[in-house]
Amino acid sequence: MSANVKKVVIPVAGLGTRFLPATKAIPKEMITLVDEPLIQYVVREAVNAGFTDIILVTHSSKGAIENHFDHNFELEKTLAFKNKKDLLAKVANILPAEANIISVRQPQALGLGHAVLCAAPIIGNDPFAVLLPDVILSDRTNDLKNMVKAYQKTGHSQIMVEPVPKSEVYKYGIADCMGTDLEPGNSCEMSAIVEKPSIEEAPSNLSVTGRYVLDNQILNLLKVTPKGAGNEIQLTDAIAQLMEISNVDAYCLESKSYDCGDKLGYLKATVEFALQHPELGAEFKTWLDEFKTTP
Image (cartoon, rainbow, N blue to C red):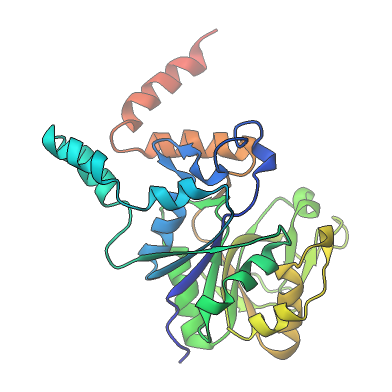
């Protein structure tokens, strides 16, 4: 049985260039999906999966993210004075009491692998997870919790994957599962990750999806991983090295993912999350139905 996984790294130092000009003055992670910023969805996912130490790898321009998870005493006092209990509950309980936000700086934009290394002093000797904040998962199941369970059962690092149309495999990192027909919610051993293969050469249609549960030994590999694509230290390259000395499994996503770092993906997520919203969903659906029939 492997050790408990309680630490999660969320890299938030990126400049959000895919979302310019919206991200010129605000962090991309603070863009709202319906009524909450993207980063809040990701942190909630981590807390719901049992993580207690949330390590934000951040940048000097991202202070708004740390402020979001801190208490705003003036605001809370004003809401309490005006007896706005519902709003007070929302702003006072953004971060559950059992969770800690820990921030470290990434002084240079040297890639995802480098961001993980910046968190190494806090990770210590423990296994850990990495969550990419651009990727938002639906709430239909807790895939991250299932990945942690798979790691604890097998001791194998877990990489989240999901099927994409065969015609789009060239856009993604693709898992080579040696022909295994991987069902949602299950894991199997990977032999390789192929970065953006041609349609003809793709070993499967399982794309890597921004969630990782990793054995601690990957930190030593990252320290010696040379710069790769984009002249950056790539986490994928270190995972490829890890496969040479340890088992790494692909975990097939059961729910649904949205690439909210992409404008179209963000719009799709906005519609679907708005339809599911407990307060706005019914009225939004009525409006959407009317909009679809408007000439």
